Length: 74
Image 1 (cartoon, helix red, strand yellow):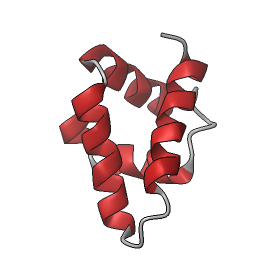
Image 2 (spheres, rainbow, N blue to C red):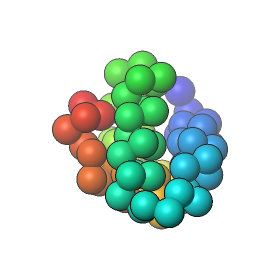
Image 3 (cartoon, rainbow, N blue to C red):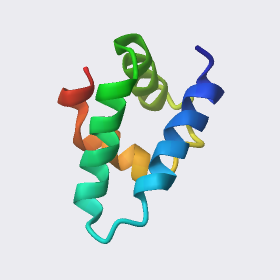
Image 4 (cartoon, one colour):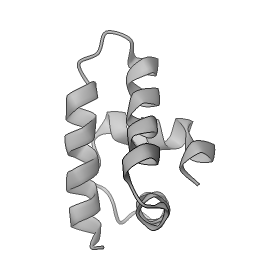
């Protein structure tokens, strides 16, 4: 799957959870959503793209969620 498509989908998920009052819970919910609904290859790809500097358009909350919950996403 293309980087732009992964970023777009991840940002849509992030937008849903971003306004939660508890930022830590929002990040956990984003990671849990990715774990539950994304195929392993998609999760691996978004982490690799982020680490490689290719997913620069990821929203801050999604980036933080991926960083904080890497173990869940692998």
